[in-house]
Amino acid sequence: MAKYKIAWLPGDGVGNDVMEATRIVLDRHSFDAEYIHGDIGWEFWKHEGEPLPKRTVEMMKGTDCALFGAITSMPKEEAQEVLDDNLKDKGLVYFSPIVRLRQEFNLHTNLRPCKAYPGNPLNLKEGIDLVVFRENTEGMYGGVEFHPIPQEVFDVLDKNHPKMKKFAEYGLENLALSTRIMSRQKCRNIVTGAFEYAKKYGYKSVTVVDKPNVLRETGGLMVRTAREVAKNYPGIELWETNIDAQAMWLVKNPMDYGVMVAENMFGDILSDLAAQLVGGLGFASSGNMGDDYAVFEPTHGSAPKYHGKYKVNPMAMFLTAKLMLDWLGEKEMAVRLENAIAKVIKEGNAKTYDMGGNTTTLEMAEAVATEL
Image 1 (cartoon, rainbow, N blue to C red):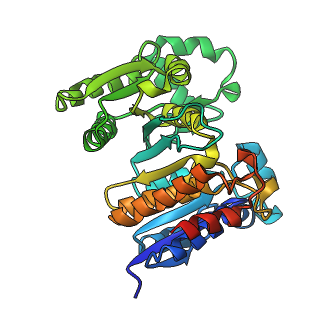
Image 2 (cartoon, rainbow, N blue to C red):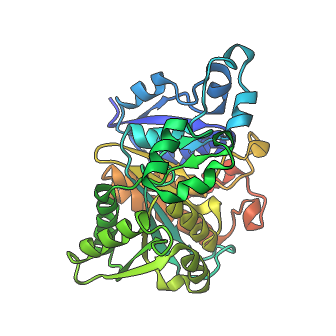
């Protein structure tokens, strides 16, 4: 019997390509696991009206963690158009399966390392080594939205907030509402995770990123909570920045930052920006982690036009597998895998198209596997 059971979720597009490449690396690494395939993605939305079938969720409950490839996602109207004809009049609404997984398994912490490996021609600057902690279940991605706004919802808001009256003239059928709901508990949890990481790996500061001068209640809650948490870590500085200014400063002075923490949407934006500093989404890994389960995924999309061409860079997926090994407690295997990845990048003999070469996805996997 294998030591681990891993839910294997290739998803859409090039998610399948990079997962195939990762299997080559993990097998060569003698990772003792049983991989259990799970249905997830756009095809299941089109033909079943559910991008995350219940059978997949139930299967995952019997596994140690999940590896996830990529997902295709479209706005509400486009999602309705691609449904099979027999599903179009059933009131089905598309909901991101990865967001649902985060909420279903309470994967409250999204960890996104961004490291400039020596020799990568796409690095903005050598030596960048930072990580973004993103609260994963609340904020702007909490999924509480309305279009049009129901009368009863508008009435409650109107009763409690004078600014709502100015919107009434447009008609409720012309209004859309997305909420940004944040709790003190989840703010404390994500900030504490960031400080614990900084303490463990020797970072000197934690930067909390929000917009409290405009988003006074939600942003204010995040910053106030961060100040409370920081008191428990006297050796680590707390820096406070606004998201717009932080985007500029991160490009200008990336070496100044180590651990950054933000709510869901701001963390998403910030981590993609940070990824570009070290080569782009082809090098951007992430882990969605809860108290007793985790889903690991690269942060790139499904790139349908490249599906099956084995063209895209699988390094993000390999680094994601490294995060999985870390989380499972396989520290030595994680270090060896990262060292192999770093050596391939430094030597520069294998480079995918984004790095200025013509190495295929699977050839990149063989290069890393050979180093192992």
